Image 1 (tube, rainbow, N blue to C red):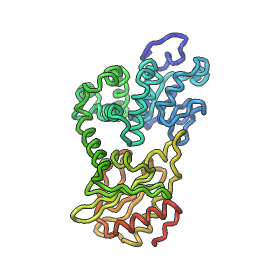
Image 2: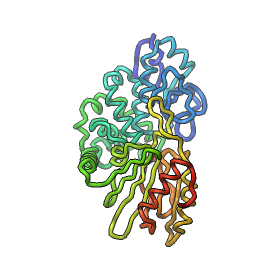
Image 3: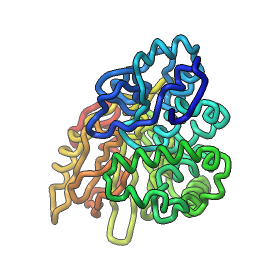
Image 4: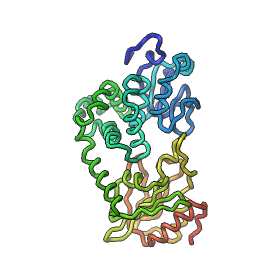
Length: 348
C-alpha cells in the first residue's frame, strides 16, 4: 500500500497512479480529470460523479466521498486498485489527498478548497490558498527549494513527472500545508504583485465597469494586469481587458473557467461562440500585418477573443501576442456587450 490503513477501510487498498494521455488499464478511481470508464469524482464536463457527492471543486467532491460510509465507498469503488488523475494541478492534488490521506485533508479542508479555487477559477481567495496553488504548480520550477528531488525524472516525460510530483506532495503534505513559509521563494514575488494590483484597483488605479445585462466587466488599465487581478476585481463571469499604451489600445477578452466546469453553487451564464463575434469585428477591422481578431471555441476551458497574432494557447497560459487595434474602446465594449447579451454579432 502506498499509504497503509485499516483493513475495514475501503480507501486503504488504493494506491497512487497516473492516467495521462494513454489512459489507465488497471481498475481505478479517477479524480478531477476523467478516464473513459470506471468510478469518477470530478467537476469536469461530462463527469460521472454521483449526485450525493457533487461540489464546485473536485477537492470538495473527494472530501465528501472520503466522509461517506465505508459500505457506500466500497460499493462505488468496485474493483478499483488505483486512484489516478490525468493531468497535474492543485485541485487534482487536493482530490488525491482527500482519497489517499483523508486524515490530513480533513485537517486542512478550508486551505485545500481555497487553493483549488485559486488554481481552477483564477481568483484570489486567501494568501495561503494562493501560496499552496503556486507551490503545487511550481514544484519543479527554478525558485523551488525541492526541485532537485525531481532531477532524475526530467527525461522520462510529462506523465512520469506529474506522477512523481503528486507522489512527493502526498508524502510531504504535512510540510507543504503546515509550513507554507518554507516555500516562500516560489510564491512571494507573484503574490506581492497580485496584492498590489488588487489594492491599486480598489483605490481607482484602473477602471472597472460592470455591465450586468451581459454578465460582463470591462477593465481598462495602462498596460497589462495579472489574470487573477482581472478575475478578482471583475465580479463578472466575462471579462474584457482594455490595455492602453503609447502605441495604441490592445484588447483581450476571456470567459472565466467557472462556465466550463460543472458547478453546484455557482451559475455562470451559458457561453457564446466567440468566433462569431471575431468575424463581426474583422468586418470592422480587417487583418493587417499578421494581426487579426481571433477567438477560441466555447469548449476551451478559458476561451479568449483578442486582436493580435493567431496562435494556439496552453490551458492556463497567457502567451498570445496582442497588437494595437484601430477600433475605439467604446465601440469594442459595445460590440461585446450586445453580443453577450443577445447573441447577435452584427456590427452596430
